[in-house]
Image (cartoon, rainbow, N blue to C red; front, side, top):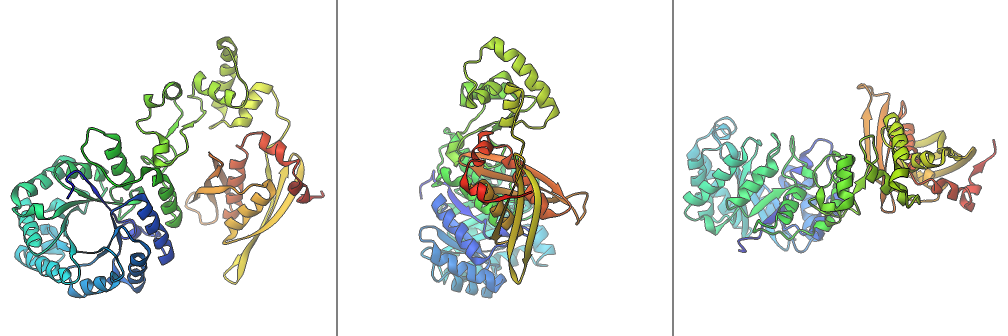
Length: 517
């Protein structure tokens, strides 16, 4: 074993899928598994085969779909679980059975109504049985974070002697402090005589926000496998975040560890998991949140524009994000304002010329939450002839017996334009109709629906759409969620550069959509 290689064990498709409302179909799991393979993960935990026919089939199909990663299936320390897992893994190039039992007295007494001696015996028996099917067997000591270290060492030693190639030390409840978890891993290395015959793995939960810190402490004390999920999703508060561990090890050059992760694919996979699991990424999420590389403070903006590393320890391109974002707010400084004005063509502004422009900008920024290109043109020119695009009419037909169809009327510079489109749902159909009117196929990167005041009859929609390399945020509110979705989409489009609306008026496709009023 390369002692400095950290093996990435991804459990997005098993522990991550335990999040309520985030269940995936088998084709969706295969799509994520293939992306995980391209990302460079070493092990994919594909599911818990005995739990349902669907999970069994997903493990079978993922085993067929990926070639390089180890495919792992979870079991309890139960013979039938292990037998079913082995059957599900029969097509895997590199199969692994992941079995185990509780290690803490909480689990031993209150979950199994058993004794320490009995659970070790059951763990050994399960390991040997799994070993009869596959060479690669991982054993989890559930709730190891709260287990007595002396007893935990006995369990680890016994299962390694029984044939375990990997031993997982989970902080199942997210209870441990980083110093405590690191000391636990260190204790095992000092007190388990055969520990170098297996890889020690960290599986940390985030109940107290310490999953990543605990995992790093485990690595620094000898663990060489980390069990992670994309976007940090998982049971309760989630698991250790794959992207956080990967970028910590890549950014901190003084750490003598490396992974096989192709970091430039991180953001793409984050978006895919968020989309398929219908679980938006929080804006301030490290590495992949939409604000992770956004700067609104004037001091920070000035520093980033002068030299990126003043306020960015990572290049956004290293994780697959095209560029950082200089956001204009009332806290922005002259440097950020000048940067955006130059982008719009207002070049060679002197320091003296910028003084009154900046004062007027601050007045405008105080009255608006965010400023777009049109606001800056208004600031410089004093007037804007074109009016924002307005939603005039929304009609959708959908149901389980018909394909969704949407008809949308938009007002652009005083004229009404109408288009209809099919989609795989009412919102998708509406967005496709809008794309027909504006003549561009836009990419929805984030779509979030929230109820207002707990009501089922009204909602607000946040959407993030990509046009080329630039992303735009939109927000809409309405009693009808489809109408709110349309409003949010148009709100984002209205933040496009002004020449977008002057351009589309001249296009033939737009003239064909004009409606007489």
